[in-house]
Length: 124
Image 1: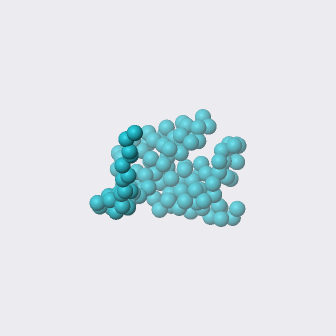
Image 2 (image 1 turned 90 degrees about the vertical axis):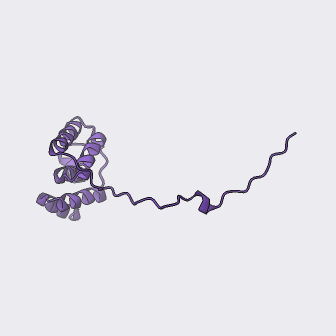
């Protein structure tokens, strides 16, 4: 019977990359033409209207990453329990912290309405 040769485990330093990876920002600049941002918003709205909130959020997030305040606002609404209740979307997962995050992002992108919505979350 052949004997298995023992190998020593590689050192942690041997497994690490030679240079550290650059940090990835969720909001790295993904420049898109305005028409493409509009298409993402329309597709997101379409998904939202059919009740496919998960897909809608993906379209909105892509548009928000490209700098769309409107998309960030809609993302905030998609997590806002008060908005979801008014839209009669029962069973959709709400998340106050995600709603606050996206409303804050929308405000940073120039959406004044987001500050009001952010304030209403704090009252809950």
